View 1 (cartoon, rainbow, N blue to C red):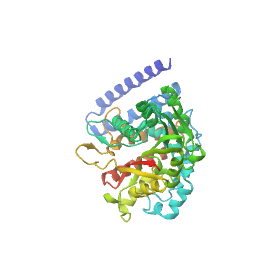
View 2: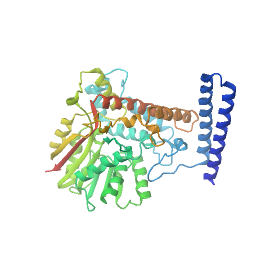
View 3: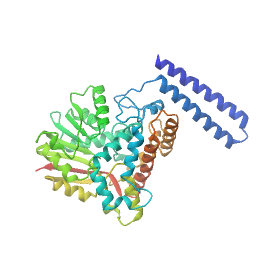
View 4: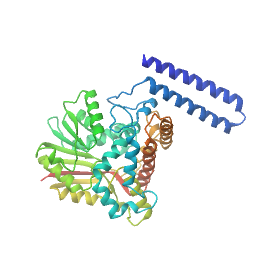
Length: 425
């Protein structure tokens, strides 16, 4: 019945849009500029009307492959049955988060001081948990269930590149159907489910965020693999308190340990949870001094700080710092390299190009224009009191950091895909 109501509603608004555009063309055809403005305004008003009716007639449901699949689902961003933040909590949470990055984007270097970094390291649990309370829905809306980048070959779709990056970790860490595996910082479990489908392994994911646990376990159940994949709430700085020593055959971390206030503590915990000889593999976010990153260059620092504030990071490390933390945590580093080292070769599509998106049905939300449309949509929803107060600030935060990520990738001073393979001694 609801589906029929929405179909009728969509047809009604589409017909209205055609009638209004035709009338505008007849009335203002001689003035293209006025005509264009009125068309955009009319469509925006019709879209808002459609969203209001969709919100009233339809309840948000999750899909095992893709939630937030329709424009109408935008009404459930930051406000659905699984949300851990109350409607009044979003505004307070974004305010507390922004306070940890006080001065960011306004005064270059402010958030790179020792005091600023130490404050974020001290408050990392609040920072990271608040960040993912706020952005998880937006990530799913624009990206899907795997919250990471990937090197991408020409002729390869975005989704194919994501799967290949995940499968590569499974291959390098020798994950088998009989393996027990730990996903360190699992998000909503997209990579976990993909790696399970690829290998058949039993995988446990750890995330500090309760909302991601709720959502991720629903997806595992919808896929019918909740006997093999599960998410649990926990702090990856305290893994030995969560798991017995020698529990896992292998572990992986995908763009997660960049949130750690002390990688040595995090990696030491992973080490204790692995069996002797167990493999730990992952991708990490780093700046690239060997490719030109200069901590004394204000533009480089501006980009670095923009990436940090927009992604809940204490501070970005270098590849050498990641390797040293692994070695000091009881690992032998077997291999490491920037998986995006050929980012500008004629055989690859730059990893950051995904943020520019493509004007297709699947890629539009990732485009700069698509993000502007999403931001406008969220603004309208907050104005209409459908979306919680503070939603617009979250959208603006993510839009700004997308530009920093693109600039960092274009200048080759940053990569989200520093690969490492390490073995427990």
